[in-house]
Length: 120
Image (cartoon, rainbow, N blue to C red; front, side, top):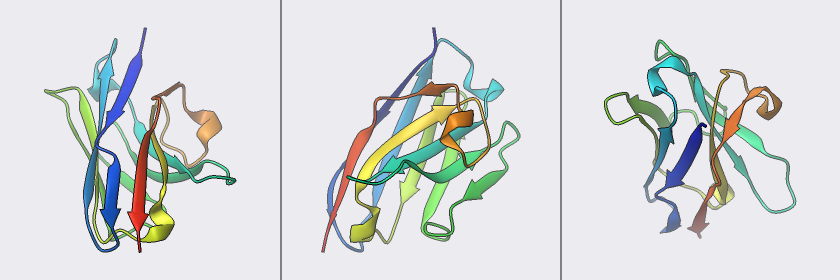
């Protein structure tokens, strides 16, 4: 059984940084394309970033240049480094596995989410 567990969320001031982690168990991370999504209250879940099996990266326009997706296959962990955070980045952040698209419906496995709150 595949499990994804996010960590690293929290409260940060605008302009600050946070690093999220997603630990995967039950499968080898290097075999999967992975992604990050976020969902703010009252809004649909939206694509943030994705990482292909060969480490090609994709980003939503809203985070391009500020966020970096990466992985460490030796630790079976994916990361999202978030810099220059804005209040509009406030959301629950989810990691997902099994696709490289920007559509949440294409992903097979999901973590439970971690809250990121950016104060102005």
